[in-house]
Length: 188
Image (cartoon, helix red, strand yellow):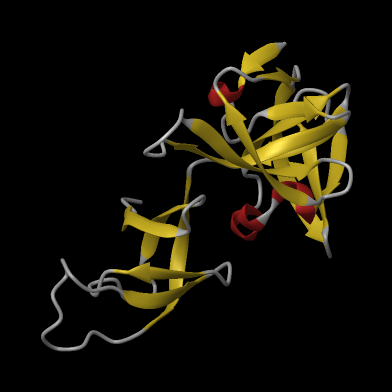
């Protein structure tokens, strides 16, 4: 289906010049002169190459029909990640490049949304947040205020995030996966 170039958003799958692209980021730019345009960063589904594109609102882009299924993350071996369809128990194995950096936050039995075009996986969306444990955090420096300073912390998945000074080793926190950022202390 054709959509306006200004309507392209992150996560869309588009076809351009006979190639299929997954939109990673988008930014609507309004320069001082001329009309606004949509600046996008996209990855070629087959080759994995990234590129930047610009679309004006009067340009048309072919958005592909994408089927989505919820799958459960099982395990990974090297760069290959295996998921299971909870209804048919069929397993799907994909490369890390299809998931991207959020793969660092996959946890056992996590439910993800996988996108398919004609039965082939083209993308994976993780939940917005996850709960992880801080395994290493710097000590609080006297005089720091919680409002203005953050300290580095290492989580149980190996990722590094900045946390407020009151977060100590062993604390379970909610992390925004897309931004790799601390949200709040976990209530469980």
